Picture 1: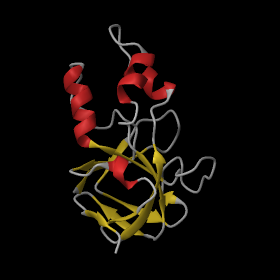
Picture 2: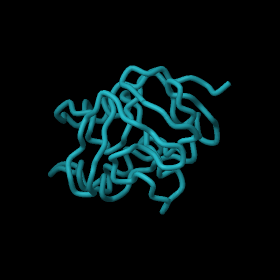
Picture 3: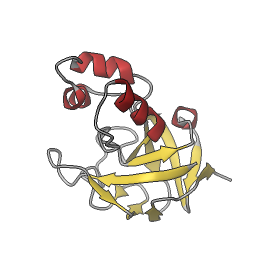
Picture 4: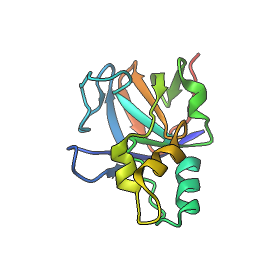
Length: 152
């Protein structure tokens, strides 16, 4: 159970930028990300998605292998994120709390739509599989390859 990739987006319309590590601040999220220190929605500090779900979507719809397509911050491998809703967990030395599923929105649907796949079909396909919203409970550095464990 590890962090496979880390992404931030500095503006709502800009591209995702991959990072080897990021600084994470309790109650605020990832420094440099567009959602840093915003509190408009529950679990807005950080978003996670399973690499396996992205790869399944990419394979099913013959898309280029790009793990940033989900627009989530953290791409994980080997962990069922849906099981972390309402639970505390650790990524390396950082404590987080799973708040709610990060359900696909029409914006994500539009970005992944194609002539043979409508935005609504994308949303339906990724329902309950598009990741997790989490609150950051402790500050520190989060690095690619960090282990994801249950909080003690």
